[in-house]
Length: 408
Image (tube, rainbow, N blue to C red; front, side):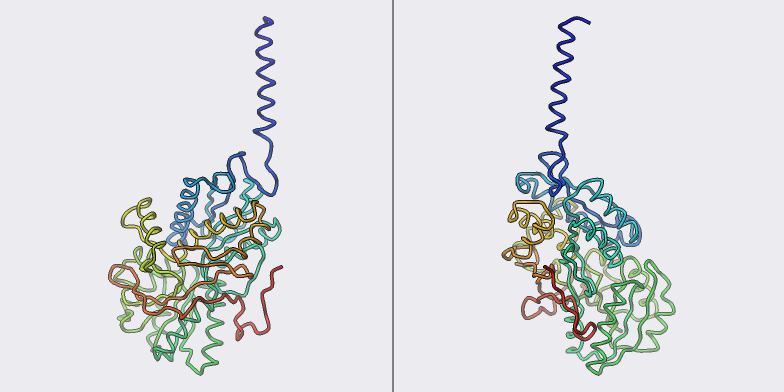
């Protein structure tokens, strides 16, 4: 080997070693970022299975926010690198993927989850690792963790306002139908406590396994009970079977009104708008909300995912979660989950498609409640708006007396 060649090889090796010392050096453990100019975040939703009908679009809206923020310069001088995983509509898979994102990929936070079963499966992972999950879907309350930011509605922000609205409409006989897992069971426990307290009638209570499609027995019991209204906490594609079988039995929503808590614009489109036309939904967002931030969001989503695309409440919460995380990380000047969480609950109100919102000290979002009615195009006409923004309360006083949420 010539001296010149030997020298070039030696210099090249030294340069490579120097590059690795700077480029391969791990970032601060609190940041958990991969490359020096990027910070990794997890996006964890069901991209397959019974919940994909609802969750794929929440993943899309989360990615839209990430793309917008990156185009505007990123967060704390870094671009966001999304690591996307499929929870596959299975709680155990959600827990495994959450661990993988945090331990193997080094993400500084995770956006995702839909069912309460998936959230509860992930909760020990986030509490053990001291990481932070941004959960965008309405849920049953009865939970309060420093490692979860609950932007979806608490029962007092969605289900109970819908119940009060139904009472005002004169509905006195209520039938409860839900998927057989945590959210419907606990939500209906709360509803039953209020039905009993108010002297109304519980006409029936029926559950189907997640993904279940045989509602013949449920439909027969509804026909026999003749309720004034059905409160529907079914999730995923079970809603398709339920509404089809109700229609086949001559009990569409103009005969027996249905109030749903997991059917939004996306689900209405996927099911066929005619199937849910006239039914009611309780949410904290509808695409028909008239404000500049919402118009901008809807236009951006359609531009990225197609002119026929629609947006829903969980999609908007997934979108705003990324922006609130950005604002909190910039206020904290850190990606450390504990510092970001502390900053998030002390932020000034943030403009979003929901309107101007903020997180309360209990890690839950202060927001407005709405009741909508599905129209022939699968959009929702807003029939009722709460008199003001509703503070989140994880523990219903009738269902969980004496329980409070304190996060230090």
